[in-house]
Each structure stands twice: as structure tokens, then as C-alpha cells.
Amino acid sequence: IDLWSDLGNAIETGGLHLGYQPQIEIASGKIKATEALLRWHHPNHGPIRTDKLIQIAEGTALMPKLTLWVFHTALRECAEYRKAGLHAGISINFSADDLRDPELTELVAQGLALWNVPAGDITVELTETAVMANHAGTLDTLYQLKKMGLKLAMDDFGTGYSSMARMLDLPLDEVKIDMIFVRHMATRHKHERIVDSMITLAHRLNLSVVAEGVEDLATYQRLRTLGCDVIQGYLIGKAMPLPELIEAVNNQS
Ligand code: G
Ligand code: G
Ligand code: MN
Ligand code: NA
Image (cartoon, rainbow, N blue to C red):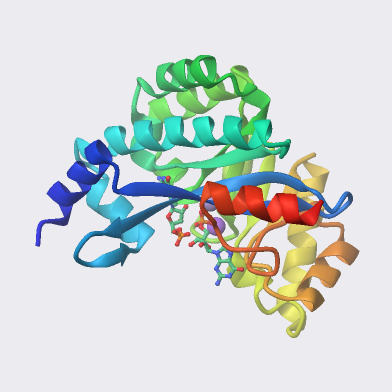
């Protein structure tokens, strides 16, 4: 099977979609933003894992095409859910390739103008490995995006390496605590102490904290007590297609 060329076809002919996973602000109980997560249902092989899909595209000519598709689709659908009454921002994942692409900021500027979504409502999620690539252009791109008014989030915080060192040179707004820390924090003391320390560290740097992978009420309650700002996870909901997201919001109010 040639997944690479199938993916190329899917980008051109419409085999992809984005799922939107709600992020809830603990203080207000409201959806503050959604994370756009790419989904590919292959006509013969069914759903393809997204990490695998990204691996197939990265380092090839498909990655910029895919990113263009993701960015425009996310902004168009964000504009759509705002019209439907959900006044929430959107978080988008960029890969190492994307951040090295000197045309990324131009693509972002064009998308913003076209879909009329305020720059401040867009958060760019960076994995530590994407930023670790240590490419001179990457930092430049991040500072430009920041100057354009977008927000920057460190994804998978606490995994990878040099996570603290990245805090010195990146103009971050948010950290997303990786679910390996969050998953067992309600039952394991050490996990809970680490999450507590991460929240304190982030707040000392004036960064907002999102906890990922929140699956149960006990975990939510611990996070609330520790002063976490935002939660994301199956307790609230999985990534869902736009119509389902809008329906869920309408049923709530
Ligand atoms: O929800 P899920 O299993 O699909 O996410 C798997 C991984 O794929 C996550 O690390 C996530 O950051 C990444 N991912 C999801 N959507 C996108 C996307 O649109 N672009 C990039 N570069 N990565 C994405
Ligand atoms: O972008 P990032 O690497 O953070 O991708 C988040 C991944 O975690 C996606 O694959 C998403 O579908 C998944 N995810 C989101 N919420 C939960 C959760 O509560 N539990 C588990 N096990 N996975 C989750
Ligand atoms: Mn992410
Ligand atoms: Na993550």
C-alpha cells in the first residue's frame, strides 16, 4: 500500500477532517478553546493514526500542503462555530517542518485575513521536539507569530528533553501538562506533586496551564484545588466533528 500517495489524494479530494476537542476554563466552566486534531479515514484501511499520518508527511512535499489544509479548515470552522454562538478560540498543532518553513507566517497572515478570526484567538501548539530541532529560522518564526498576535503553547510539557531550557528562550503563553503526569495524579502522590510543581512554575512565569488527558472527576477536582486554569480530556469529550461540537454546545445551553 502506498499511504503517501493516498494521503496526497486525500488532501486534494477531501478524505480528511478535523476533530475539535473542548478545553474548559475551570473558573468559568465554559469552553475557552478547542484543539483541532486531524483525522483521516482511509477508504480501504479505515482510520489512520494521526501520529502515523504526520510521520508519513513530514520531510516530504506533503507536509506544507497538509498544514495549509489544516490551517484553513480550522479557521473556517472556527469562524463557523463562532457564528453558531460558541465564542471560543482554537488551538492548532504545528510540526517541526512547519516551523522551519519560511512561508509559514505568510500562510498564517493570509488565513487570518480570509476567515476573519482574531489572531489572539489562535494558539499554536508546539511539541518540545518540534522546537528542539534547534533551527535558527524556527525561533524567528515563533517570534513573528507572537508579534502577529497569536498565542504559543508548549505541548506535551514535561516530556522530551530540556523542557525548562525552552522556557528561557520561547515567548510562551501557555503550557499543556502531558497526560503521563495527569493520568494517575488522583491516586499517586508523586504524580500529583509533580503536577503541583509544574503549575506553580508556569504561574511564576505568568503562563496559563492546560491539563491534558483529564478522564475522571477526582482528577478534575485535584487540578482545581491546585489552581490549574484549563482542562482537556475525555471527562469533557473527545475530538468531535464540527456539527457534533455545535450540537453539544446547543444542548448544554
Ligand atoms: O488525537 P491524536 O491521537 O490524533 O493526536 C496524535 C498526535 O498528532 C498529537 O501529538 C497531535 O499533536 C498530532 N496532531 C494532531 N493533529 C495535527 C495537525 O493538524 N498537525 C500536526 N502537525 N500534528 C497534529
Ligand atoms: O497534541 P497532543 O500530542 O497533545 O495530542 C493529544 C492526544 O491525546 C490526542 O491523541 C488526543 O486524541 C488524545 N487525548 C485527548 N484527551 C485524552 C484523554 O482524556 N485520554 C486519553 N487517553 N487520550 C486523550
Ligand atoms: Mn496538541
Ligand atoms: Na500533548
